[in-house]
Length: 120
Image 1 (tube, rainbow, N blue to C red):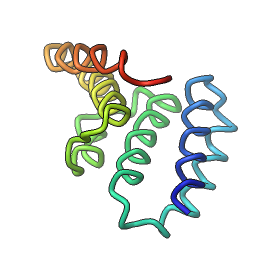
Image 2 (tube, one colour):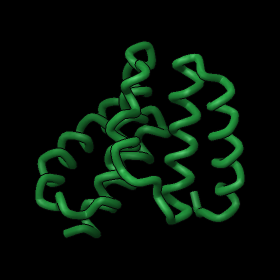
Image 3 (cartoon, rainbow, N blue to C red):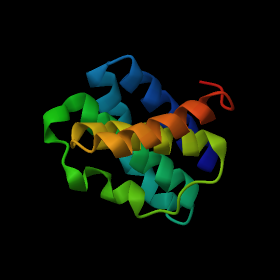
């Protein structure tokens, strides 16, 4: 169920952060095989979308374009601190990579503020 997918998403992010490309790719495939079963859960789908962006940044940062964050932006801005932190942190990375440094600063500042409220 949802707890299982959330656990896999958390594991996936740990592998991304550790730069374990092969393990991250395997978890991504496992998640993609299961995620279609929870299409109604917008929170999990947003979390997946954010991690998918972060995974792409790990695998090939040069492929990041202005459209690379479109999927995450299609969801409502998250209200819980955990997802808000990731949203703003990854949006800052995206903005920085695509050359919008003033927007990156805004999102880095929001992420920094939220960092105090979440366990990482």
